[in-house]
Amino acid sequence: MGLDGRKASAMENEKVEGEEEVVETGKGKKSVEELRLAGNEAFKGGEMERAGQLWAAALATDPTNVAVLSNRAMLHLKIKDFTACLADCEAVLRIEPGHVKALHRRALARRQLGELDAACADYRALLAKLPGNKQAAAEYRALLQEVRGRVTEGEGSGTREVTDESERKEEKKEVKMEEDAVNEKDTEADVSVSEDTLLSGEAHRASSASKVSGNLEKKGDGEGEVKVVTP
Image (cartoon, rainbow, N blue to C red; front, side, top):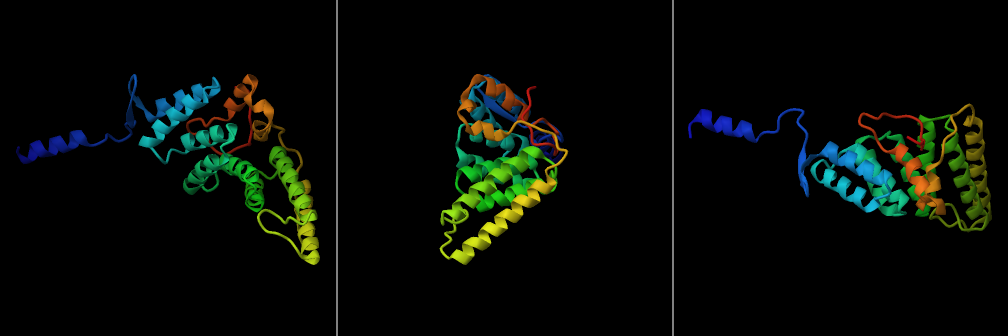
């Protein structure tokens, strides 16, 4: 084969700029975007396992797809696989450090895993980006009250045990200051349904699927309110 032939062959094997990645599925080839959208539909229909399979197929081809990673984190949160949710959120935040939905979902997962200090840090970062968001502020206040309760009981904040009385008082003082700061910022914000409802018994009711579906990532979706809305 001559030089021109080799060049032509090489060009045929190169991915055209802007062309969708494709993967083999049971019904032929599908692009990453098609898999993402199919996963979204499965999720909306309550087919959690199917949604997870479709998004996993998309990520096998495009492992840094933020929209798919964020959606799968939501799925893991819904089925209470908090460790997997945490992993997907951290993958998103390595790519987009300020991704508000990933910050929110990681905070919820960390709280459920007992990582209270880390969850507080996520809420602080979230409220720094959305300073008037009532949903995030309310969840953060509830978390701070949980931290305060553990301090009062002598269990400490997060994973640290507080044994000294003066240290315990200082810890309570810090928590109170955090609560006051949140209360000051909690003004004139849009009221929205909390993702934390996914962690209640109603998370498995059919009606919740339609509410949660509004939080699926849309292509080109930017930062904004942390909401769950009915599409």
